[in-house]
Length: 176
Image (cartoon, rainbow, N blue to C red):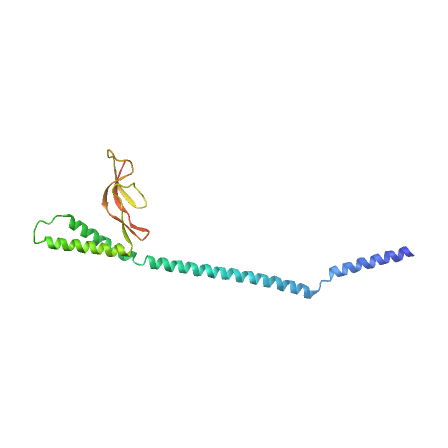
């Protein structure tokens, strides 16, 4: 009889354990689901905030870049007249009446270049320098005695940089 009571007691304990395992309070499940949802929403909110900050940073960087290079088209368009001034001034003026005009044109060319220089224009040094494909455009190669290979030996057209960008590479002849 004592064995029967002990066996019944064990069965009661086992059934109680099973019922407690099986009966999960629906409120606890709902609370857990809401906690998960809140966690997911917090994560999404943080991601959205990070995306917004990155967007603002990119827009600001683009705005700064746009301001920095705002004049590049104007400067590019003024390079041809600057070249024409230099070509015109290469010839010596022999007529005494035209010398003041030539001097005036030289002053205009110099002033124009100085204004462009103050805005960020810089001439690319090329003659006698090593060939740099990022700054020079080789139009000819020619062997030349006493000159190392890949050195610029003649400049056909000056190259220019605006701030830190090449806006026109120098057209050059390179030694072989």
